[in-house]
Structure formats: structure tokens, C-alpha cells
Length: 108
Image (cartoon, rainbow, N blue to C red; front, side, top):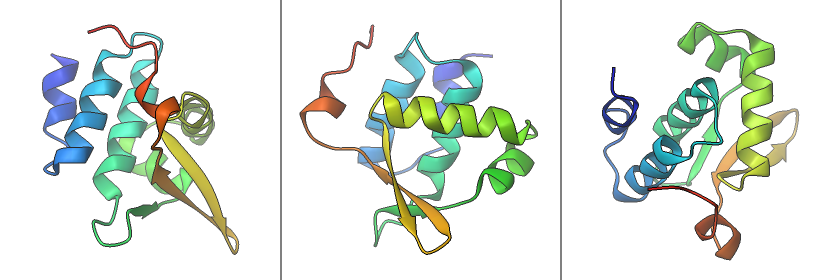
């Protein structure tokens, strides 16, 4: 299955599509990190620009282990795809923006 085609089908918004294409082309990301990233992008509220979803919900949706989800979200935040924001006891994901998000070592 073509990962780029799979990830493209996860999004309908322009900015999310750009992020999905970067996820699909980033050879340093594992397949699970790409899928977790695509699911987070799919859950981003267009009004707030935030996705509120737990590791457990992501794991259930994607049928992978919670530990794999946590590792993937850490990699995605370290690679500047998302920012994690603690809101009370919850964590929300924001699309990372700025120069660090645009200057990743991504091979086309």
C-alpha cells in the first residue's frame, strides 16, 4: 500500500495536507509515527487549531500499543511536527509552526 496515498486520504484541509505530505516523505519516521501523526492531524479542530486526543484513544483507533503511540508522539514533537500543550490533566496537540517546522531534513 502506498503510504503517501494512505496519509493523503486522512485529510481535507490545505495546511493539514502539507503536514501529511511532510509526514509521508520523512524517511526518519517509522510507519507508526506517520500513522499517529496523520490521526492527530485528522483530529485537529479547524476552529481552535488543536487536537485533544489521548494516547489510549489513538492506540484504540490505530490498533497499536499505547507505548508505541507515546513513543511516536514524542518523536513527532521532537521533530517539530506538533507541540504538546498541557491543559489541566489533558494534553492537546498543536501544529508546530515557524522556521524549525519548515526546515526539517525531509527528503522529497
